[in-house]
Length: 268
Image 1 (cartoon, helix red, strand yellow):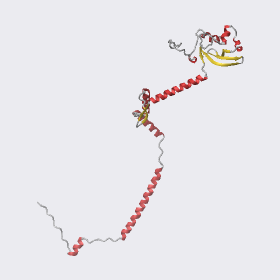
Image 2: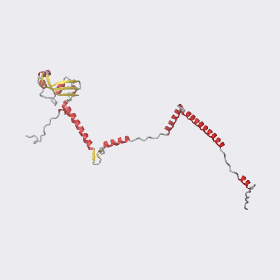
Image 3: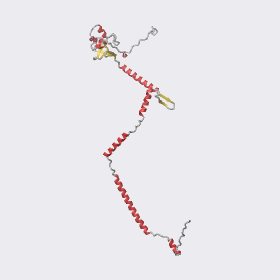
Image 4: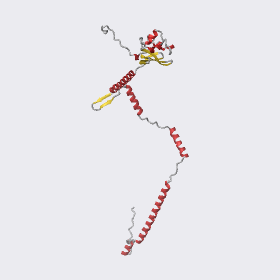
């Protein structure tokens, strides 16, 4: 008979790593002496009814007999009273040999199954691959292609990224400097004046050398000019100046007297 035709859904076994169990009546009185009885409750999905613990419990015998039996059993592995208890499920082959099958830890009265190493690796790898795939899908959604420009990014569709880009642009913009007030300028001038009075500037030492050099240059120029003047005077004494005869001499030579110019009469 096919259960699918009768409308019965197939039974899917739930992963024990995803479930937990607790009994509120036991939590206030839980201790290392009764934690195995708490774990052996019928409502606990992690407890196997076919284990050796259940046989010993039904016969009301001591748990020390488990070492002489073979099969599945539960032992209290670690205790950190009052909050943590670790119980191990194992298959005993002999009094000295047992193979671990699973570990369960009880924290604050709640029972969980500890994951095995393969489950931890599988979960971490799946989580990493999922986040990488999500990142690649989101990055590809912002990619744009133009035949002439090629590939580029466009984040305008994402408001959060667009606002973040705008805020970064505003932060990078240069801030305008505010002008100083009259009070600030006056105070700065007063402070500078006090500093100049307390620590006056030293007089420059280079000026004396420059002045001496200029005076020497002036003296040398004067000596050269005086020597040049004496040379000019001696040259002028040696030269002979020719003068032309004046008009009086020429007229005296002609007639002995000169005619006076006619007087100008005023017109009335």
